[in-house]
Structures are given as C-alpha cells and as structure tokens.
Image 1: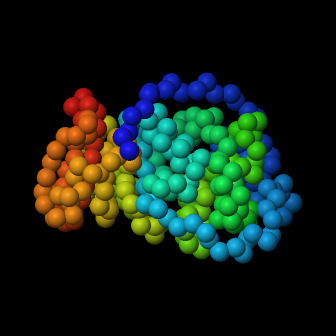
Image 2 (image 1 turned 90 degrees about the vertical axis):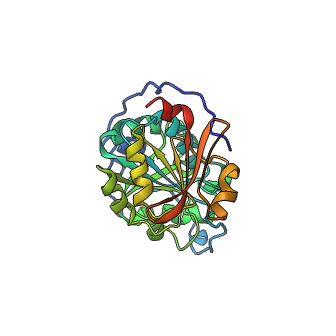
Length: 274
C-alpha cells in the first residue's frame, strides 16, 4: 500500500488533573505510571473469556521506531491506525521511541486516539490482556475517557512484552520501549521475541536509519514510510540479487546489509531533502 498522507498539525491539548484511579486511565499519561491494588476500580472483564484459546495469529506484525527529528505526525498517523485495529495485517505490534520525544509524542497521541473496532474490544485476546494488566503494575497509556469508554480503548503498554501478555498470537495492544541511542534501541528490542514482518523507521538522519538496518536482524526496512508495496523489489530479493530502483516515489534496494540480504525502502523526496 502506498504511503500517501496529509500532514496534520498537532491537536490542541487539554490538560486534565491527575487521576487517583489506579488502573489504565487517561490521566496517567501525565506521569505515565500505573499502580494496581485489590481495591482498584478496574475494567470489568467476563471471567469466561479469560481461558479462551487465541483465535488470531500474527500477520506480518511491524516494529516501529521513532527518532528525534523524525516525521512525528506521519508516524502517529500510522500508529493510530494500528491502535484502532491491532489484529490487522502489518499492524504495528511494538513501538520503540527515543527518550527525548517520548513525552510530547504520547501527549498528542492520547488526544487523537479513538475507540477500537468492536471486533477488537470483544476479542478474547484483548480481554485476556486487560485481565493481565489488572494484575500487574504497568505503565499504560490509553485514550481520553471523555471520548472513549475504558473497555474499548486503544492501549500502549510500556516495558512489558507480548510474550508476557499473551499465550500466542496478537495481544490486542501495542508494546512500547524507550531508548536513547540507536545501539540501545537494538538492545531494548531484545526484550521482544516476536518475529516482525517489517521495521518502520522514522528518522530524518539517513545514516542513523541505515545503522539500524545493519544492527537489526530483520529482512524488510521502511525508512520514513510504512506498509509500502514491495512488489517492485520482491523478485530480486527472492533471487538473492542486488538491485535498486525508484518506483512511484519510493527508492527500493535489495542489498546485503549486516551480513544478511535485506529490502530497504525509503520515500525519495524525504531522502533528497536531507
């Protein structure tokens, strides 16, 4: 799918007082912490669905990496779509975000979150994840409760892994880890055992983005774009051939990078502007 979108200005944010409710609340985005207790006001989840077997499988999940100086609006546009439907093909499963942009990015993200699809908040995997989050102290970011009911909110969970949250298959939420340097990002990502179908890197510093392509043991990298059609380069990649071409505004490469053959795609206008 081509990565065409319109830049949007960040929404005007409304400040809300810090809530004392201990489970995944909107107000926790201000201090980003969640402490659970037996007396907590929690989302009520039917016990019967907790033991249901997963009915969904990962379908080319994406690892998204956001760096300082990257196109935050464009990255947020795609992340919001995955938050609305984390079971969709190529949906973002894990977010790695650089420390110095984390706070402002999450504050804007919260204000733009909308209710998840009904098929998500009724899904046994999502309900199972809510139950687990009720049991543990977790840094959890959810939508504004004035617009989105708590039992149908998109959820970002910090410093927990999908393996911890789910038996197998998608968990219905996006996990998030914070890093300071590109090298640290690769170390942080070792917490996750999920096999990603692609990596979407948002970084205007091309050299730094290519450094990530070398350090990570993945095959498909999309720099400043997301879920791009790989048809123009797939034959060369499958044949183990080096190739480079520009198609419909994207530069495609099939190259050996980090001792592995990889596909690297980037939007031509973005790179030429650097």
